Image (cartoon, rainbow, N blue to C red; front, side, top):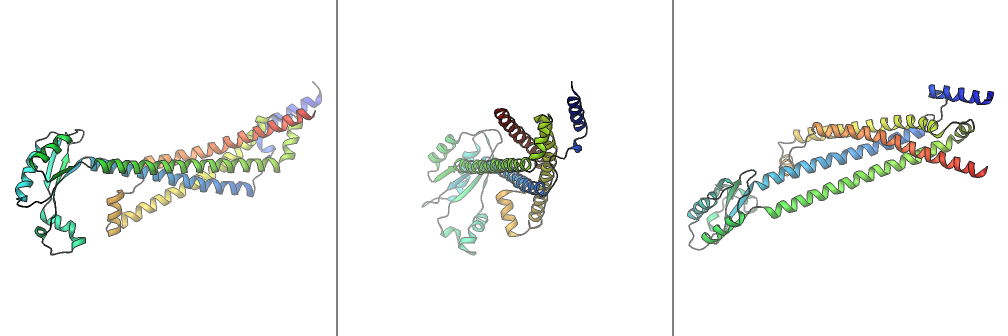
Length: 322
C-alpha cells in the first residue's frame, strides 16, 4: 500500500469522525427558503388532517343521533280526532321491540317550529299541519321498520313512518366525499413538498459540485457524501415541520376558543347544532406530532435518494468516459 493510499484512508477516517471538517452543504438562503416551504406544507397538511378528524367526528355524531330516532307524521283528514289518533299511534309504535320511547310533539312546539314562517298568533287548527311523534330507538337493537309501517298504514292510513335512512345515507356519502377530497389534498401537499426537496437537493449538489468532485477523486463513497446531506436536510425539515405544526396547533386553539366564546350567539348556536363542538383532542395533537416526525424523516430520505441517484449518474459518466 503506497503513502498516497494511506493518506487517503486517514483523511476519510478523520472526515467520518468529524463531519464538520467537510462543509459540503453550507447553510444559506436556500436552507431558509426550503424550511419556509416545508413549514407551509406542514401547516396545510395539519389543517387537512384536522378537517378530516372534524368531519369524521361530526358525521359520526350526526349518524348516531339520527339513527336512534324516527318520526311518525300524521296528516289531518276530514272528521279525524287528532288527539285520539295520536294516542293510537303511540300504542302501536310502543308495541314493537327496539322502541325505547315515543313522544308526541305538542301543539305549542309545532307553533314554535312554524313561527319563523307564519309568525306568531296563528291558529294551528285552521291549517292542515300534520302532527308529529318522535320515536326514540334502543341502541344496538334494530326494530322491524317494515312491520311498523304496515301496522300504521293498516290502522291509520294518513300516518307516515320515517326512519331517516335516506338522510343518513346522503349525509354519510357527503361526509365520505369530503374526507376523500381532504385525503387527496393531503397527498398533493406531500407530493409538492417532495418535489421542493428534490429541487433544493439538486441545487445544493450543483452549487457544491466542485467539493463533491474532489471527494470523489480522493475516493469518498456515495454513502459518505449522502450522509452530509442527510443531516443538513433533516435539520432543515425538522425546523420547518415544527414551525408549521406549531402554527396549526395555535390556529386550532384560537378557533376553538372563538367558537366557545361565541356559543351564546345565534351564529354560534347554529354552528354547534350543525357541526357540534369544535375541540382538539389528544389524538389530533398526536397526529400533528407524528406528522412533524414524518415530514422530517421524509425530507431526509428524499434528499438521500436524490443525492445517491445523482452521484451514481456522475460515477456512470466518469466510468463511460474512461
